[in-house]
Image (cartoon, rainbow, N blue to C red; front, side, top):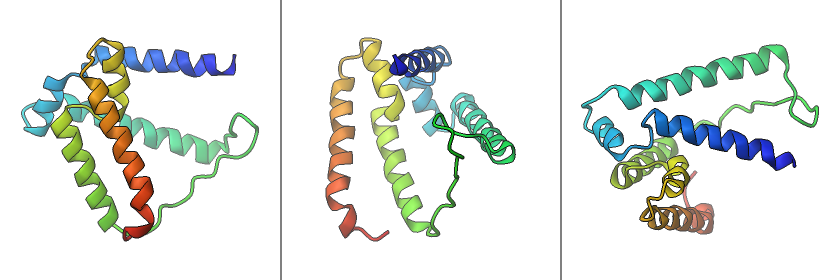
Length: 137
């Protein structure tokens, strides 16, 4: 029964992304061609919401569901890996027309070719897991 609340939040998140057209290939295409502000606005709202949420967690000492304090660990220094990872992520997003979250939403909406995209995302993650120790971090 604990899982039910996560499933409900997932459904609500899927509905919000669908209604805001954040899962629309056309909207993503517009974003990468710098023809529309729509997706950039959604991303900025997410960033601002995240910043506010993190500040509330830090200032109010909010605890997790087990009652333990939430620790936000500072990221390791090193910008090259973030640039390279971001470029690969962005290229994949642009080529496929979907980032990882909407893959499941689009599958649920009946866009069956997204099965190939899901397989590619899972395979890429698996491949990274195999070679991550050999990569410079």
